[in-house]
Image 1 (tube, rainbow, N blue to C red):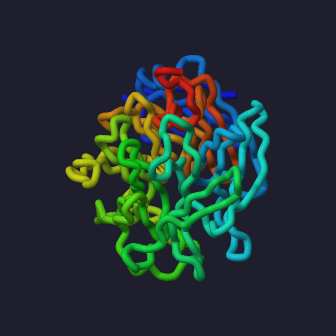
Image 2 (tube, rainbow, N blue to C red):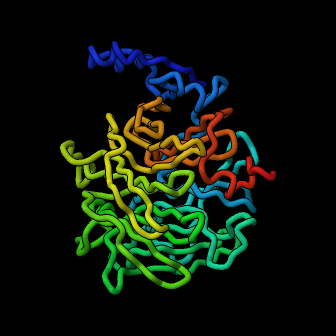
Length: 364
């Protein structure tokens, strides 16, 4: 279980060793704490929130994605890369039990899955749960990096985008579907190259917008070291993009560990780039918003939560790197490779929970 811990910002400001001393527990195993940097953190999580470790496995089953499938009431989480002879697995975590039983699977045509989201194909009734999942397939030395749509219930897949007007992507990382237009917004980084399963990059690190109904593909932002997580604000007026340039072949501390915000113009363009937040530990990987506009990001010691102005409200502190996380009704699951964590009885609702789960909707 966990406990809330209040952080004294004045003590922290005056003493760089304040926070490590606050977190000393004497335990050898990783543990989880809810660090309140601002009083609003209690409103976001709720005073009755509790947290625990769910799984601790000998292999890195919990890395990225975390896509909900309503038919089997399960989260689909991509594992971390192991070797070219063992494609990245999908870890399927059932939500039918508080023990959260799991299994592993792979989908045809999906080589090295990373980030992903639920997906409505063009023309599909959006009053229904999303029928498909879409993954950023990083590719390998034989397969191009691609966006690929998967039906987890039929075990069928279909490539949607394998190149930029004939040019090979580097290593597609994360993707979101615009809730109004259905366009796919995604990032392309070099992590397949850094992990030695992709060739040397031949295209800049950029953010893209793809129209599945027309085939139009456009670059909407550049100037990144390593663009990674991407997320819309609840009203889709802002896009948040994390730059994890501080992690390349190794740690490069002078490079960005930063989330940038952009205004979305006419549903198609980005403008007014500005710094939203910088993580004090590690780098911001997966990024998600709750329905109140707070921005959550997986980082070097757990999950960090900021308000709309970029003020740090608090952390779900696990003491190790988290690459991503996923909301469910009344809870959030945190992925830290070998370990899966859950914070239950929370007030916050993820931006996409209503759409994906059909829970908490105005008419439900």
